[in-house]
Image 1 (tube, one colour):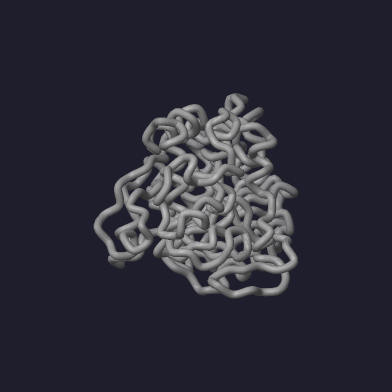
Image 2 (cartoon, rainbow, N blue to C red):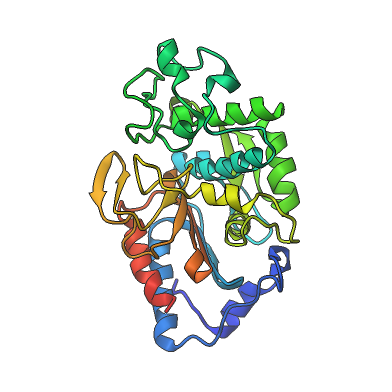
Length: 348
């Protein structure tokens, strides 16, 4: 079915978006002043996204919805393990996989503001000795910051491999320790502090932790809790970043200092911060490979991203006041670059 960017179609999709209210004037309807070549470029970007098993796609610039689309879900067992019910606006609630890391990074930033976590302290200060399988002196050298920027020096089996801080290794099982650190520091379950610190004050009514179904993919990663959210709540989360840590009603959720620290480049990988991916570095390490140049060459240099399995995407480009969200099933390996080659033309 061809995609249409007609005024009638776009305005119809913009109807009922009051729930997406953001600071100041809130979300406005799509900008209808785009030239025909720009509109055609956006249609091409949407067509590409749809061809890549996308179920939900949103682009918001300066609180104006540029596009919002929801498409049928693929009927595959793996995707069904990540998908839940449908929202009133027709989008799926989906487990965003490793995108949750970036949400947890925000919770750590809030815990820092509350004086509950010091990222320069050893992990054992929060979890006690024996949380890893490394020798006692080596375990004591692993600080919270090493877990946040994927440089713990541990294997996925929690055995010692390298001195902490010396190498980047995208280690999801060790990342899951961050959730335990948060709960231990706050004295509350992860679900409770997420609600009290973030989702409730920010009005993220479509976001919550859920126990994942039995699946080897989840058990192998050692992370049986999934963060389930919608494209609209993902946009709201991105807007908190763009607004310097403020909720839609102006309530400060996190200090600008702690927010900024999330995006400080790791010495072991300039394309990674504190559980966030960062564009614009001299090189990137992703999927175990070191590549020269930025993470996504076609994207804005200041772009930061929360990325998850099955190519859940939350892109935030502060210089353009832009948020792009993509949900769905797995894409081609070069999806990030190919999408941004098209979006760059569409956002001209």
